[in-house]
Each structure stands twice: as C-alpha cells, then as structure tokens.
Image 1 (cartoon, helix red, strand yellow):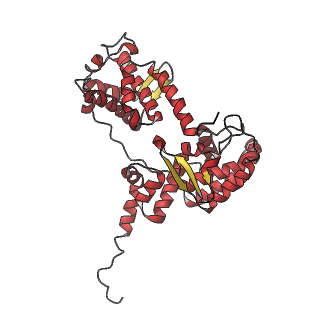
Image 2 (cartoon, rainbow, N blue to C red):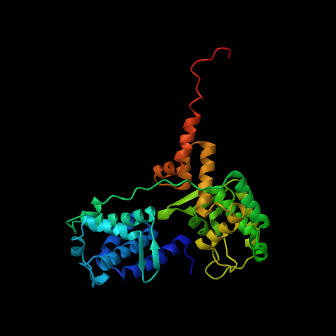
Image 3 (tube, rainbow, N blue to C red):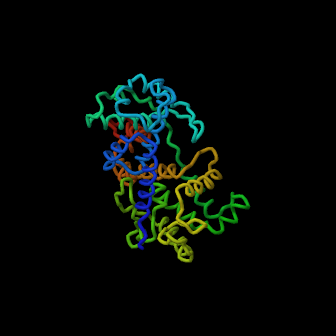
Length: 353
C-alpha cells in the first residue's frame, strides 16, 4: 500500500486524538469542532479541546452551582448561566491549578490569553448559531501581553553552531560516539533550518522526493496543508547533498522509507528529537540563550530582513498569513531602520562642506 505523506499521517493521528478527547467532553462540543474544522488545523482543534476541558473542570471544582456534576452532563443551558465575573474568576484560577492527570499547572499571561481566546471562539460560535442567548466571553478582556525580546543567534554564533555540529568538539565523550554517526545529518538539518526559516514540523515532514536540486528548492506543507516551494542557497545545497550520500546507504524502518531525516533507529525524526538536537549544540555555543528550532527560524527572518528591508518578503518566505505577525516580531528592527534614516537626506549643505 502506498505510504501517505507525513502531513496526512499527522492529520489522521490528530483526528483520532481529537475523537478521544471529545469522548470526555459534553456532547455539544462535537458540534463546535465540526463547525470550526474548515478554518482550523487539526493541531489547533486539539489545543482547543484541552483548553475547554480545563474550563469545564474549573466549573466542577470551583463553581458551587456545578459541584457534584460530571463533565459529560454539562449542557448549553448551563453555559448560558455563566456570567462575565465567572470567567474573570476562571482567569485567576488559570494562574495556578492542579489536575489529577497532569499535576500542577502555572500559566503566565500568554498561557492565560490562549485559553481565554479558545473560550471566546467557543462562545462566539454558539452565540452566532443562536444556540446561546448570552455571550459572557465577549465581555471579558484578555490580559495585556508584554512584548518579549526576540532571542536569536548572532552571526558569529550561527557559524559556531554549524562548526560544533560538524566537529563536535564541545560534546561529551558519550555524545561524540553518537556524533560520528549523525554529524552529516545534524549539519544538514541545522543548515536547512538556518538557511530557509522553515518550521520544525515542516522540516521533519520532508520526504526524499520533496528536495529538488535542479531548482534548489524543497516542497513543504504549511499550516492548513498549503503546499509551497521554499528555495535554498549553496550552503544548504552542499550540506544536503553530503547527507544524502550517507542517507542512501541507510535501510529505513518499515513505514519510514520516504523520510528525509532519519533517527538512529532509522525512523523519521520527530519534532521532539530535533528540538533536543538543537538544544544539545546550542547550549555549547551560547549557554545563556535558550535556543530552540523556532529561534533558528527567527534568526533566519532577522538576517533576511536585514539584507532586504522587505517585511512583505520576510512574511511570505516564513509563511505568515498575517503581515502583522511579522511586523510584531521585527518591529524593533523597523524602528532602528527608521532611526537610521533620519540623517540620510540632507536639506542644506553646511558651510565649508
């Protein structure tokens, strides 16, 4: 049987996971998830399901009206009785709570914002469909988000990271034993992330036939399943070719024959394994920066913006559907560029010049 593309396999896994989660939630939740399916990814729907379960658990534990009830017994009529003040209590609850399944949870402003946003989407859906008379979520303000400095690698740190992946000088003796087997793969993977800015999920989803050396491009599937071609430069080309010479000699595990990047178990690398790989090399090069694959993406976006000054190009290459997402990340750089322009135009020559 023909092997399904990675992104389709992920969607199938996520669909099964969502069905499991829905079996633990009130029955009307199925209507909500069917309604939002056309405009959301399977990963987003799973995140919503987890967030809604936290809300229902809060009602049962903290709201006297619902104490003693079971989550499955909650109805839309119950939700119509919720007031804005109840949701404000929920926001306070989210700062710290415990669950039997996963222990203690601490949420900062971004975690609280995500969970309240999920609840707003939930209430908005049923309110628009006239299945709820009230929409208390519309009366609740999201927490003010404080902007965080973008963590990225400097130019010299990028070079050191790639040198470390190639040579492994800073690794432990145990790590060096594995490094001999993986250094070409590791160098190709890091060079690809730093040279294209693709997401880690897009990287692990690459198949052998997604790489086109004739046009120096890779075929990836963005969020929502959109297929695009991302182009790479000479350094990425060389690193990939070097790794592929080795990859062709590896016998993949069954079901992983098409995967580009393989683990030591000859299986497609997971997102977690790539995160660990990046962390392993990055903490040798820059121990005070918490570098993740997403930070490598920011590093690429920064370099591209510095070279081109074109925020629309950066948004397009990074796959941002909203230009404001890109602006938010590179606002400080745009301000710096505007400041540098203040003396670029001379109005009058000074005497003696």
